[in-house]
Image 1: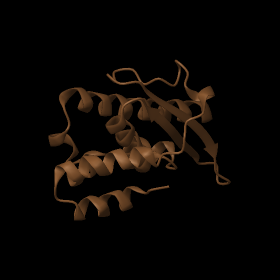
Image 2: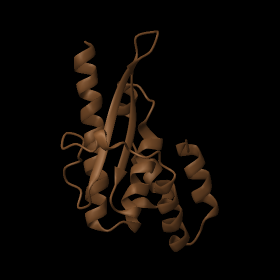
Image 3: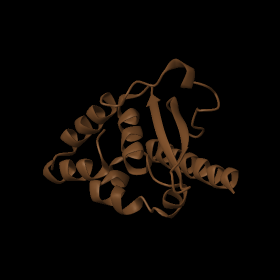
Image 4: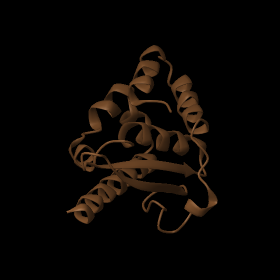
Length: 143
């Protein structure tokens, strides 16, 4: 799985935004396929113009920490790449880490905000809210 550090390092060496878009699409292609059973209404991300699914698996560490693992997919190539970025950023972290992590420095480092259409930026915001909502629900369920 591609880590967020890998993605940031790759973006550092790609100057051209056309190439960066191709790279984001490639990230989407590298995602593990989402099984059909996960393509449910419950896993659909509301607020995205494209079809986006995020499946959340909650795991408890030996020390009791609640970790969330995400898989996802989209019917749009660039959005699927954005799903890959969000998974790299948040998957495998504890619910507390997810809720305290500010993705803006990462988005700024790769120039995401200024190169997304308002519609895609809304979709990223919807994915972020869904991930945080799942983290809050996991914390509540584990209390």
